[in-house]
Each structure stands twice: as structure tokens, then as C-alpha cells.
Length: 168
Image (tube, rainbow, N blue to C red; front, side, top):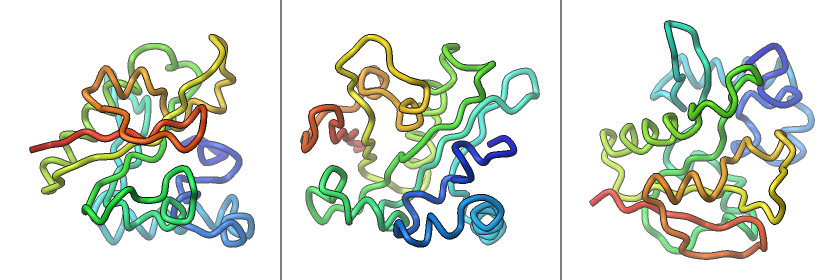
């Protein structure tokens, strides 16, 4: 996640905390918190490698791990199903636009399936313009989720579809 934890000290804790907690914990505290989660297991996400070098990260786990999803009008649950959520991607600049996020998305779906998930959700961006600042790519793009077999099941925001993939 680099020295700044993805984006300004997040360390993929954004969806796990209330806004006040997140603001208070940015940086080293979030880094320590995600380390505790990793050390206690199960894995909170996957690291992608190419040629033995880490080139990306995707956070994936049961939706109830991420309290902020339930509190958001855009990502609040559609129903009571026990879904898994894919909440964020971290790809270093030098590895972007090389298909790594798509590979990580596929791997996250397989990981969720292996853990017994019946459905996986994502909350990507569906940009209105061709050019999107890199900052917004941390949620993934709707087109990438569609290519991975996800279907839009709701849209509570013009640019944020709620997408699902049934795992059978």
C-alpha cells in the first residue's frame, strides 16, 4: 500500500470505521489496525504479484466487516443475504492500466467462493467522463465488474452502481 497506506493513511480501514474514527486513525494507527486484522485472520484481502513483485491489493470479505457500507445510502444492503463485499483496490502508479485490478477482481471472487460466499457485491464507479482522476479508481470501475460477470442490481447514485455476482 506504499508509505501512505493507499490514500493518505487509509490502509483499507475506511469502510471498517465511522468517519470520526477514520479521521482520528489516519496513518500509523490505521496501519497498526490493519496489521492486527491480518495477524488475527482470516485474510482481509489479496495481494497480486507479477514476477515475484507485489503489484496490487484488493480488499474482500463478508459485508458485515464493513460497517460503513450499511450506513451509506449508496451501499446499504439491498436485502438480508450474507454477501461478501469488494470494497477497494490499491495499484501503484507504475502498475496501473495493465489489467492488474481485473485480475485481482477475479481472484477476489474465487477467494470469496472458496470461503463459502454465495454472492459477492461491488460498489464501483461508473464515470460520466472518459477521463477520471486516478483517485476514483480505488473502488474499481463498473465496466471492469461487468466484464467479470457482475450485474447492476441497484443505482442509488448517478455514478455508483450497486453490482452483484451470484456464485451459485
